[in-house]
Amino acid sequence: MGAIWSEENKYRQWLNVELAAAEALADLGIIPAEDAKLLRAHASFDVARIDEIEKVTRHDVIAFTTAVADSMAAAGQPAASRWFHYGLTSNDVVDTAQAMQLTQAAELIIEGVKKMRETLKRRALEFQHTVQVGRTHGVHAEPVTFGLKLAVWYEETGRDLKRITAAADDLRIGKISGAVGTFAHIGPEVEEKICEKLGLTPAPVATQVIQRDRHAHFIATLATLAAGCEKIALEIRHLQRTEVREAEEFFARGQKGSSAMPHKRNPVTSEQICGLARVVRANAQAAWENIALWHERDISHSSVERVILPDSTILTDYLLDKTNNLVDKMFVYPERMKRNLESTRGLVFSGQLLLDLASAGMLREHAYAVVQKYAMEAWENEGDFRAAIENDPVIGALVSKEKLAETFSLERQLRHVDAIFARVFKD
Image (cartoon, rainbow, N blue to C red; front, side, top):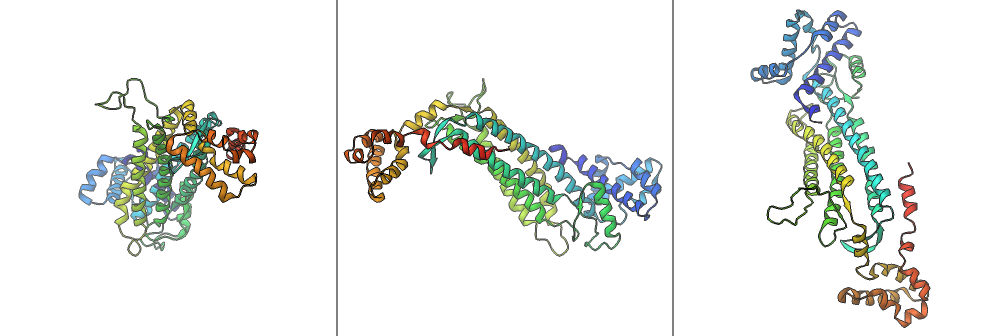
């Protein structure tokens, strides 16, 4: 990913745009075809030379075109260089080339999402029936399976894949319409030919620049994707807490968790993911600020994009790789999950008991009061909720022992897990 945003690749894409422009102009008979061929054969650049020229010109595109003209002169073809950058403004080249860089970056990110989905699917199926307590507000709620948790993440990354693909398509746009978007020097037919050669779609209308709502949408999509990585990492951090210890990120032999406490196994990868996701989200704010520019264009967006486009794509690619590795290698402790589930001695079945009492004839408000009374006693005194229910004569008169066994049945609670998996993994 870093190579996509290197100066070498940036200027390579600029050159690709310029050469496509020369060839399109030649195809339409506007410039000599032989000179377009000479440009294709000999036009080149040297990054160090561009940097040297820019120190004087203080304009990167002029430094680039001058360096390319130097390369044509060195090749013995100086005359052909007069058609280089012919009829174009700087942002015809910069914005169109940047669309190509963003397309390259999006391809890597899409590949990363697909890879993570494969890992999530494999591990979800691995733990499809691994019973775990579900938590709402961080408090024990009702039974789930660890596989269901992973299935939720898998399904979300499917939406991520659709979003990033659509956002990338929305940026696969070229613009060769001149200084204010009016095609004052070359016509729309030239733009269409150039974009076709580059695998881009012409912007239907533009100013001096491609409109930045496209870029903002792309960065916002990366921010959503990064937030999904954080969601996974945050859950694993919670599950790794000493009091919970149901799952844990990989801890290598020889790894150290603390300089002071040899026992520590800290969720450092998960914490890193959570921290870096904040940076991508912050960059989305900057991208939104870039939408509004003065009149047909100002330069305020340019300096921002030199930071947020490389940083956001590089960070998102990194976060996907780190999160995929986190899920792939995490330790899972089913026995601890079972122990935590059973630690409240049946409290997690209070909702089912409420329904069963109502079904047996008890008014719902009365049933709620009865169940809550026993639940609060068990909660406050660490008592046995199920035993207290089974020993209540009023409940016993309404619900048989066999029916109460069903009330406290994990199989009953989780009987639809396979159906959920069939919906999620139907592909």
